Image (cartoon, rainbow, N blue to C red):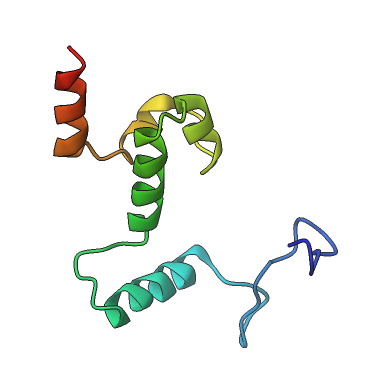
Length: 96
């Protein structure tokens, strides 16, 4: 973004051969194709968001920041992207 600043924030960042810009559906298919080529099964277009937000949460990043990164406006919406890993539960129990 710093190197190739868009002329307008309303213009697409990435263009396709057939249209003005990628749709959400097109990007979902691309991401799913990347996962498939990497041999990752069961992943979805939201897997990266889930992993990233979970990792940040485990490092102590606050929920308001976690909401801001993907542009979510409600804590419950953010919470559905946070996985609860056994190691985190074990750490919490040890703190008691």
